[in-house]
Length: 113
Length: 115
Image 1: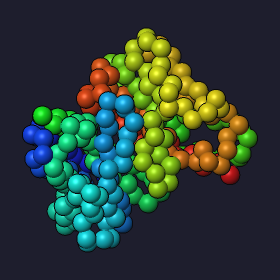
Image 2: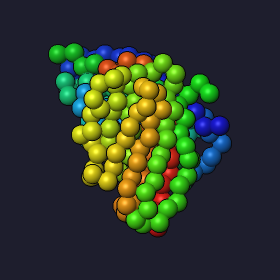
Image 3: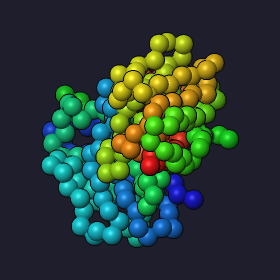
Image 4: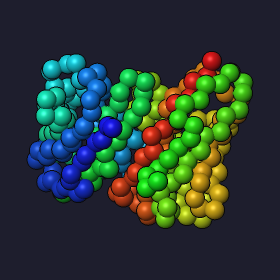
């Protein structure tokens, strides 16, 4: 069975600082995708970053980057230069071929001014 | 079961037909959400139910989409006159209270394919 674990229910960071959100997953599949989603108070889920399992290079999107460790089945999200607008719930998600999604329970991030 | 369940897990339909997707939230959870995940896209919020309050329908893409939640528990998402662009995975989530910072527990999704 596929599972996604986010072990940090809540985190906080000072504005302009860097924070890392952890995610681990368990699967026997070899080809899959990993995502981080952000859910601000608007409730709209926003895709932050995506990583294909076959790519060794870590994905980067502006201030957001991941540390993908396939052997360890770890997929952490690093947010640099945190901004107030980064306050949200962050979900790690795993997708196999066929579009079946598995989500973690989320990490509530608060950016403190 | 202990988690959010959705049925069917897969649905193939012909363009123009109506479909109903079902969500059984975790018992006792007052908030229920529907999302849509199209191929290569992020999750798209569709509708939100919280207790007996009027649902937030602001994410429904057209009047072909509707949802109801009976008895504050089971929810059904109905798509009328389906179009090919409706093909996606439809995800349901529930949470105990409904504050945005509350953990949402997602179901496995229903994969809809409109031919």
